[in-house]
Length: 312
Image (cartoon, rainbow, N blue to C red; front, side, top):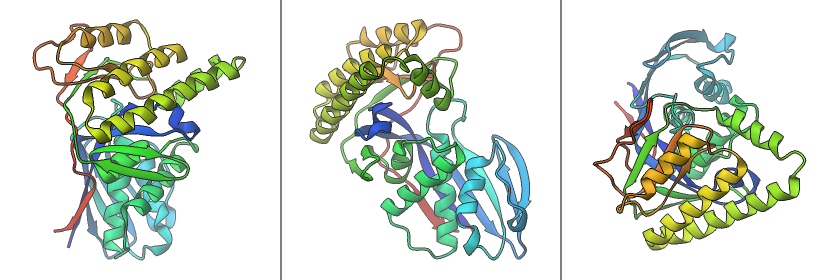
């Protein structure tokens, strides 16, 4: 018997930075996923085969959290006390972890789902979200809003709030245009840079965060009602606040402007922590590709499919 679990990646639509301070966020699951296949063993050995990072071997009695397998290993550690035998874990990814598409959350959710199913643990979406967020935070020094975990668990366009923990997925979806800037700053580093920049401007920072939170709150309502033009307008407004935080830069601004110029795009902004990574436009565009070194158009769409797990 094998267990096969798959979880989608994600893109932040609204609420970056503010979600870390108790405000809501809007996040979309995307049609690129990470799949893990768990094959039980009759010893305590654990062997991980990743198509991105190669092979890693350990055992239940000598489990150490090491990069680049730290999210998977932390997920295994989460269930360590309930594991009597080891297993082989094959990890297949439809996207690279060099882009901000929620790969860490997706592999965490898929690994937890596979192990829980193997152990016959009854897993509800909210429990998997809570456990997945805990694992992600432990793996990255306490940081992580959990929004990407929510998208990987629930699928669709997700209204998420960290405290009190809440998530709901909306059935209506809309096309997205996604461009990768060619470079990425780690989220933890982007957050540190913003914190340092506003260390002597605390009240100003709070005002920006409050405004981003209000954008997300309104955006959640528009997404729920299918008011896509209004959602696009709010995305564009939040882009101005991302620039105010200092996480936009000339290339990102040019990419956002190019998306705005397209009649099919209802709104555009940075997705994620900024200082590189992806820019998204609400709407479909099959013609224009932003021509600059390293910029890639990513064939992504929202998906209603969240985490799945089956015995094979």
